[in-house]
View 1 (tube, rainbow, N blue to C red):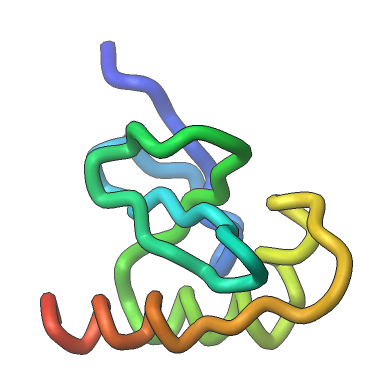
View 2: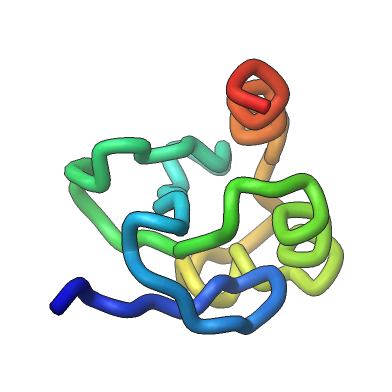
Length: 83
């Protein structure tokens, strides 16, 4: 049985393989496609809608427990490249 995670964008539960893990490194949102980077991670569907909703609701800031704003540019570039 595959682990289930909750998307921080739409709040829907999905299998871990259907979601993308995101970590914060020096106030930048970095996609962790292999889910092996150290530190706290947030899970999101790899769609523009879910990522935009998570950014708008400040869900990444809460889930990753960081203070201050996070720069989503690296994450957005990765989604556009893979999309």
